[in-house]
Image (cartoon, rainbow, N blue to C red):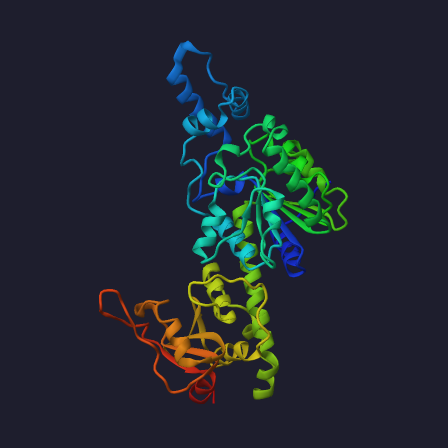
Length: 442
């Protein structure tokens, strides 16, 4: 029996799963139909295919069915699913679009390992595209064997329907494909692997309730033996409608030890909120690590407001996480928890104590914009040179505090562009934490 819950409770449950290293997500077509992605529904694709086919053949052949599975099955039985239907009747660009907030959240949480595993029935590559925008490559597999090949500590994305770019001819469109190769083996491999991966995990199901009806059989084949501890379904339809649309998924959580819940909401909005709360928790943890040193210096605990993450945009929170970790320029976040280095959190607490307020991922104090970067055991001039091309001078901070770096009195490198002109880095003033302590904190 599905239990209805509100947004705050749903985010809390999912965040608990992330913090306890047990959260898995299953994503359906509904996620990619949200704007600005706005990928077409099965009904839309079917109508476009029917119109094109009927126009080509007119009264010389019976009209094509308006149902997408009947269309796909018709061409599959004729051995023309790939050569005719997917090549000529389904738009080559049907699954291209702009990633929405849900894709970006999923990519971020997979890349950093906050999600243990992503499973999707979507054949589009919007999550992978979102990963590129976050400077990373989401690891993708189209069966259990491929997903299991992910490097240690990498959270893979299993595309149980196949992928439009990896193997378009064998993407799944009709139930008839399930009993034939290579789809049959792919689903069998996925089922074996998922039975292990989802044991006692928390399963988040998003965007499933769409008009791709044959997914029930595919999912039941792939998920039939799994035993999650908690299931949370996020879908805008009423619980009764979801049960009618996806009876197997609705019943999957009936035996879950930690409950079977439903939130009526848009999947992309929920994932965006989950990503934000995860980032805020990450930043709070980094601040709290500096709290003991703060108390030693000022003989008082930092107030609650100082320890809380600022109210800034999700992408700005992502950049703060990068700086707290000391991510290399143009590299993704691949760590889900902050490093245990109290001086990084302490530096920001000291800025905030003096009245610094957030300006995007920077901190503004007395008209200066500060950026705090973890740079453990590095030479200051090397750190500055490495970041030289990351930010244009027009939007660069005034001061960059490289926590953990040592100033050897050497200038940063100056790179020469291919044209022979000098390409200089952002016009920021770089300093060690010790220099910042003497100039600003004392």
